[in-house]
Amino acid sequence: MHRALTYLRLLLASLLAVGGLALGAGPAAAADNGTWSVFPVPSAPNSKAVTPDRQYFYLEAAPGATVHDKVSVANLSDRPMTFQLYGADAYNTPRDGGFALRAADQKQTGVGAWTHLGRSTLTVAPHTRTDVPFTITVPAGAEPGDHPGAVVALDTAVEATSTSGHVAVGIKRAVGARIYLRVSGPAVPAVSIRDLRIDRSSPLVPGLGASRATIHYTLVNRGNVTIHPKLVLSAKGWIGGTVLSTGPTDLGVDLLPGQQVQLSAAWPHPPQFDHVSLTVSVSGSDASAGAGAGFLAVPWFLVGLVVLLLVAALLLARWLRGRRRRPQPGSGGGKPVRVGAAA
Image (cartoon, rainbow, N blue to C red; front, side, top):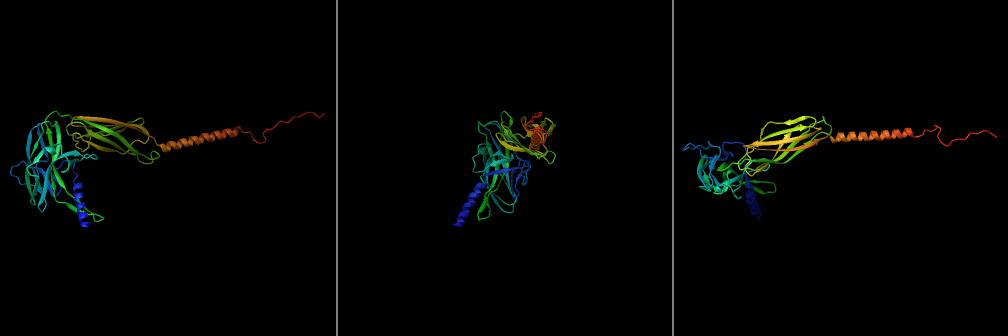
């Protein structure tokens, strides 16, 4: 019974572990995890190389058209490997904007649903590669613009490890070759900034420590093309003038159409005593947007201490003034004495 329960947990954990596939946002020569790689077939005919000369699939098609290509799966290990092949839609991870892919058991609505592979399962011998043809059939009513996705090779073997409590956890690994498909038609780049806020920390007394701030915002791609945004920050204060100014900074994110991502930027030394107006601007792929926020930087501890001292000084002055007005003993105060001549 215990073995059956452990095996059931293993299978459930395996299904949950393949809930999504995240790929790094930066450029790479191939989707490669060190054991196997997936990439477009080399352009040289009859090439047997296990390394690619094309980074990704860059394809373009009109609505209703079909494109043909081939994907290579290279086994870099010393044992045969069996893979499940499928097309997947891409999306941005909400927290960092990473390029991620839908799992095999998730619903595909874009390029993942339009991709049809020549084989759904594939066994590759050690240190060799196998090429698999595929087609992408674009629906007649497909919206113009970018439709990103990937061809994914999922290792059918379950990697199991034992955790505390003798519960086995199963993991299936997958690697995908990115597809950047553009459907012909008007390109509409559009981006917006939402939920801008500033988290700050500062010392109790200005000058006796460092102040820090973190700028949080949500970037939304409202257009139909992928945007590679750059960030510009500027801030002005009533007292200090320009207190922050940065040049265009590459965010390292390919923001896909219809996606949004929560980002942040560090502000190492914001003013400790000023009224500050901050402007956040992003631009990329002929799209731009801006948003503003402000804050009042006041050393409240020091202000409270000054107010307390002022109140104490006023109370002391009032007490001293009342003390001066009070009659002193032997100063002739009391009932007056009548003096007259004796009869």
